[in-house]
Length: 482
Image (cartoon, rainbow, N blue to C red; front, side, top):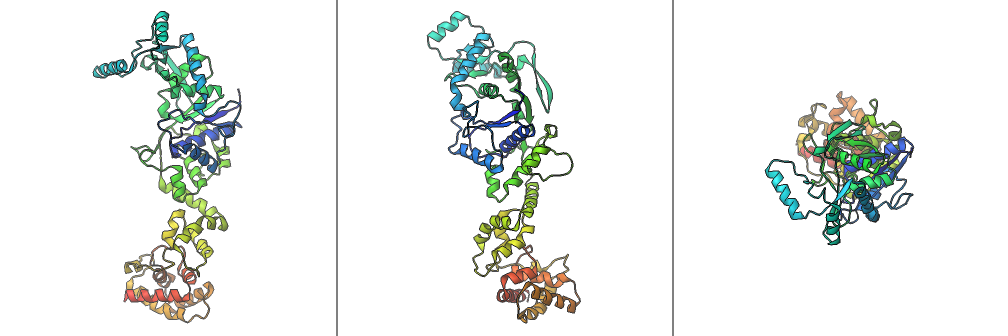
């Protein structure tokens, strides 16, 4: 099969972790870059860790970011079923094929014996692994135990000598001595396959040509290579990617409560920004460009750009990328996202929310920051007069008091309350005083907002709040400064 076929095979154990989504993205990009198929397979055989509703989370997340699969559980395809628990009947047959070929064997060791062997090995400083007690049982012994109903597993028969070599696109050829490889279990006592065995069989039967997975699977890859060789199957192209780290010492972990895709969306990040940022975690495009749509990522992506070093999840970088996406939204798109956040804190009927949104867009990095940014609009909270001290604007409390006292009668005298009239009046005052703009405008902005950072300047906020409220807030500022 010449066509590139990749698969994303998550376990439905909870939310979509950032690392899982990156694996899905890289897998998708490899397929689409090469005109191939992207397959979704649900690996649900670990029933104890399964979380109700987690399969829907997988579907919803992939669809939300545009990683649409060509074959999968919900749309079918030529190599289904695409849910691993629905494929259980075939795995034992494949394991028995290996037994017949002498590449696997029945193991009848019970739990007590295995624990005893492990304890002895650990006490002797030996790396724990199966001691191959059942590896050379005679056909008569095996037959007798099977007929007696003795529980068994089927183990892979790893060569006792020599080495096994597999190729990874990032790490090159990796050679492992066979003597350090355990005779891993392929079929458990309940007849179910282990994860590693089911993976190999499913990937082959589904025609998977490229496999992207975490580099924690590098240690298992030699056993996979031996299984492919035992069956006479062609190995897929391997891409073992490094972890995404919280910092230099700690991996991002769902168990530790680190951000999932759902968490980031709930915090007000745009899905396009999240996907764009995740693409840059461990992959470097050519050149300095950082902002890519999904279609642009398909064109740009190349396996050679994937790093062998861990990627550090940087919330500030994500926020900066998110801000760029927010700025690129049309005013109508921005308002659609911002309106629910505005309505959380703005209850006044006289406030034009679209005007507030127009002030916010260029200054918004995260939609969840909006309520705190505009919570002064309905009512002015208490604030510290130290806010009036600003080195860059060269203001202090006395200068601020003088400026507010000068601005108050000018604004009181306006018959028409528009942005233009407010602007003309204040700049006429600035010219009359012979001072810099900030001497008048900065204290006014603090007086009407009670904040150091606001969505607009003094003129826009005065217009937004209306004449009566603006004058009342200026008088309150004068009172506080006095």
